[in-house]
Length: 570
Image 1 (cartoon, rainbow, N blue to C red):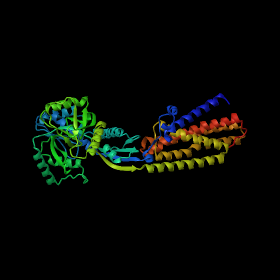
Image 2: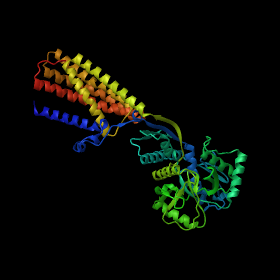
Image 3: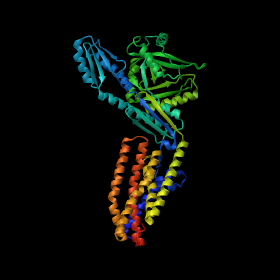
Image 4: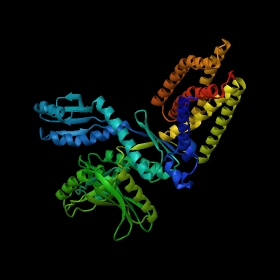
């Protein structure tokens, strides 16, 4: 045989050995192997999707209107401060039910200067309506789309960070549509804890306490509002605390300063375990937020030894936090997490190091408090969600279901492969054995490539693998039929084989390229199961063409050059 054939044969052997080495970690615990073998084996393992190893599948959604409203709330405060420099008697209020901002002024001569100021510093707004003494501003369409997309992107990043902290391997987090996020966590056992950590807003804010009303006055005012508006919050009764809080603040508008809001602190009686909600009057604007968190960890109260969360701000947050405490020495600073006041300590002096702590409330179960402290520290480190996310759909897949799916997939592949091999040998004789060798080599090639690129094998992916088995022999069938045609023309075995491969190549290329383009389109536009199917199909197409054309031809060259066959068994 020529040196060229041996070079091709060595190349195929290397590929086969690399493929087998690439899937060893997926089928066997390599830690049980000798150390010298572990050194040469690649550190990779084929990932199994949620439907094969079990886990948690959840679909979460944001409220686009709420995202816009929250953005308008923050901008309204800044806008008011800027416009007061133009017209001292100006009023800036938020419209109810949408994200528009109403600007009212008494001096009509100021309107040009006001519009100029808005255009120069707040180009994201457009003028929705203009009256003699007022302007109504709204986000431009481009800005609305940008803010909603940014909220989704930030939520995905925050969720990804939290999942990384949880130690979940091979998570899948992706957007769906304009306002939904699909999260798949294979292998997760404690689904309730995972859902709690993923969905927790973890919005940390530092707000000054307005002491113009005493705690007794606030309690009486809240009780009056609850009675008048028939608003009530009972833990575990179905109503959300965030909804109750929003209703209270809407109803109390006009009875407290415009730049104030009501928030509550949860207190538990150590004897009766009764929960009491203590109202606080806070400034709406948060001077410092949890966006500046550098680190958060669990600590212990030196007096009670109860768990608490210690946090430290980064350089960007330390300075404004120091300025805030310096300007308000003697006042009270509320630490608000997810709309709940966790503590409201008095500012006794300037805090220059940006450090603080969050207490979790006395009297609760210590183990439960410690776990809550751990989870709170985790989400603060990982980053806050930019807005509230609602759980829309949840599916828990048991590992036994995944195991059944794998076994069913194995049986389907085994039966399909065996049936094809028997048919090819029966119909094409020795040439059918060559096709069977090429077919079998597809499996290590496909699985090792998927493992190397970190692709995830899903149940639809198994379907794609089974489909690839059927498609893998298509090229061989085309080649063999062309060889038969050449034999009927009384051509020599070598000429028949060479012409058979040459004439079949164009058809093989066209057929597989069109299928590959379709698979890539499915991957680009599809989600979840469709992507899993497309990945396996795409890799399978490339591998099947290589084995059917390159390896099959190599086998025929062996028969021609080494065996010196005088007749092709086909």
